[in-house]
Length: 308
Image (cartoon, rainbow, N blue to C red):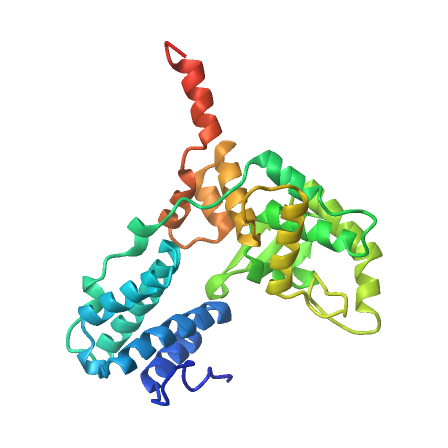
């Protein structure tokens, strides 16, 4: 069994066995994805550093310690969603400490949930997505791969980590679906549209074998060296083509996931169906996509107001 690092990266040499035990617990016992555990490790490492600097023993952690850490994150310029993520990690960690009888008081119950902290997801208009999908240049060496990647991200709403880890055998182009393994190793089936199917088929036939060479790899998307394309390079590719398409705001693979959900709901899709497609455990997570599109708002006002 592969265990995580003995302790999070910290400014002090003081060991953090409680953090390590918690990370092992959510990885081994709860089955959380490696990327999720890594995010917890990073955020709790910063919280632990804060406690070390203040000479706070684990049994003496207070709400003031939590609040001061959040204030520090805000002063560093972190956005609301990032601070909410830190708070969520701290809340689960404190609940674990209380269950382990390290804390005498259930501080987690005093921490407000992050639902009120959620921002409307950052999306772009459908015509901008179309421009993005058309941005790869057929004359470029990796055109077929990049086009297939963009089409699949938007067609399925998959997380970038899910696309990175997607093996060939989990996409069925004949039937038009992908078997996706998401957070907590939960499996879901997501349909794949015709445009994405055609793009992936061309990539598999004409480019992937050349990238693979005499090596073996199960990952669908490969780099120029024949290794699986990592999430950093996927982010760079999306950003590159967003700039080429003239998209006037930062755009990432996760933005395409937001667009996938928002455009489905704007087209009349049922919220629970979108929840299933995204792999959300809680419907409230999906409800954040039900914000009213500005263009639609103006159209409705113009069409129905007695004095347009």
